[in-house]
Length: 420
Image 1 (cartoon, rainbow, N blue to C red):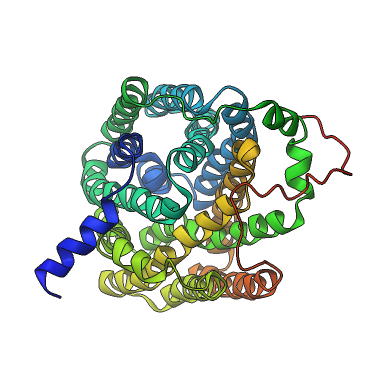
Image 2 (tube, helix red, strand yellow):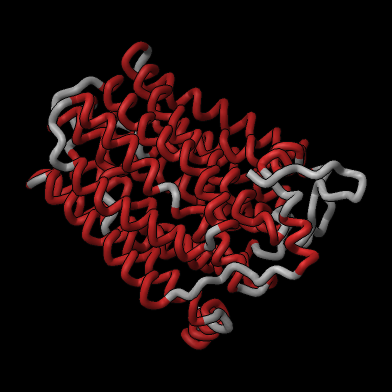
């Protein structure tokens, strides 16, 4: 491809987005550069502390349970208190709890603080997604979400390689580095990001009184998307919980896992932007079906891996699924979310990933301990297939176009639901 074409594509990708978006993007990048706990918790507990895979799965599930608890609460806070206060509270609390986790030695204390880390770290997600939808024009949202996802994985690619070697030196250093980087994110939010919650007219305030959690739960179309998101998240979670345990039991080191999983971040950094330019105007129905199947069978191929190279190859397959799925599904979620209930809707979507983070470690730990890793990878293929079929059925009922202000259950005849 000629250099001038590359430059034009890059300019078109990054131009036209507001300054506030780039500060939010910078905060995301800094946060992911310091990522450690979620990636290496399983190895920390099984190799450094000597606990079983089942215990490691239990702790990771408690981390996910914290995310489940905070998803809805953070969504309500995002709508009521604002995006900026929610982000500040979440990031400051995350920094403190991650640092504390590094000093825990008792198994009960480790589990309790891991729950606290999940509670605080997940609370920022609805606020970030809602703020991004607030400050970016509707026609630029898929591009903006793609760039933000690109920042997440740029940081992950760098941190996963570095953290693997940090883990061999000192796990505590990894916890403290993540705590420090998260604190930097809170400072960026405090200094550079104004509140973005749209000002509400009297009509909006009246509508807001009708948008509660019950409204979201009664939105069958949206909840179908949330359910399918849970299934696909259940598969993707195995890259962080099932894969490191399986590689550790097969005799690979933390650095080996770090190098293999870094392929995920490197590919997303290299391909996310051009792939998004290719898919952004294509049929989301087909994209979600294809990405679900790629994810399931990409992890399914891990059953045949016996070297770092083959593990890395399987990572390539499911990473392609992730690149397609992430901006497509996030764009769909925003389109189905009314403006005055955006935090609650984003909280419910976040709940699908938090619930997967709760279930996936238990599933992977129990399956690996009792049946072996090959059964886990076969199960991933089954779940990916079910998700693909689900998207094919659900998306046939969706209209071709949606607006981000569409209120799915706010007909005049609907009884008022008090806001949660």
